[in-house]
Image 1 (cartoon, helix red, strand yellow):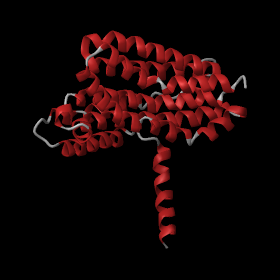
Image 2 (spheres, helix red, strand yellow):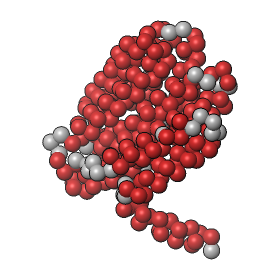
Image 3 (spheres, one colour):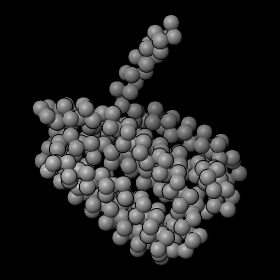
Image 4 (cartoon, helix red, strand yellow):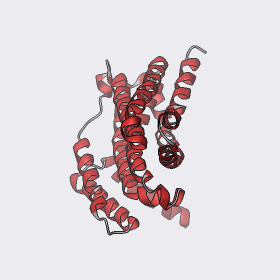
Length: 269
């Protein structure tokens, strides 16, 4: 019970994260800005559980290694972290490029200003992909009180940032506050896992390579006359090509490709 209660409270704090932003926009701004933020939130709300589900599939490995093999835990955390950085950057870039189309589908032409809000919230969703890795690392180590402290602190920081930025830039200010709070939470979680455990420190080799891929993936935003679908296709091509050229993809991913096709052939026989 002593372990369950702090973790349950931490999960509750995480569940309130984006909803607090919606509440603050409704209090501190007008109905128009609330409409823009709510339209963006509807899309993010659907996508938000995905990072936790994907990273959570590796939790049994983390938990077993955390019990008696921190070297293995460091290896597995590091590899999942690298993939999560790539996926998080791709998610952020794709949402930025596809935001006008997504908002047009959800809210119609009158909600187009919400595209900028969604693009910023895409950064928060990308950070959540990385944050999920370290959250599972903390959970595998049994650091329940640290999880609670970080989640509650992130919730408070988010509320403070959003409250300060809404008067300055409405819904976009709220989105910026949420994104900044999520990035800081991911960094703090990583520090909490690594502190006192140097064997869990991940490699940072891919960070500049993924940053370059993301920057190139965002260049189609300057193509004003190009349809959104075409911009997204160009963006994905630039992003993926840059990852391949720079060698950012972990070798383990390449090793899985032959196994995947081998299994596919066996299934179709």
